[in-house]
Length: 120
Image (tube, rainbow, N blue to C red; front, side, top):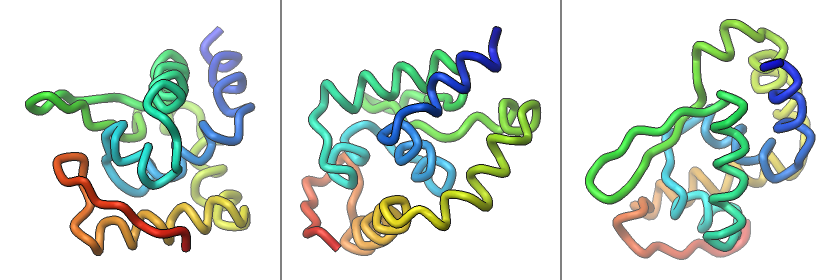
């Protein structure tokens, strides 16, 4: 059942944080590593789980794959969209992640550049 896979994927704080960022921006694994301070293996494992649940989709460009939220899944399962639109704004860690994303982008951050941001 697809809804069960979605619920399983949402049952992890790191995956919620990744989904929160990908709802607001298209990012590659290296971007997520930097913003969330994850190692590559951990980030990839979470990305795989989100892809299996069809919560995110990726598009390959050169040697990178850029991920974003799967709009079709959000349309089909409105509770996920509601979570992203309303609930995550109240989660302190998700708020911090969005500040880090904004800072990362402000510094020109993208996977093609090695930009390191301080906690903030």
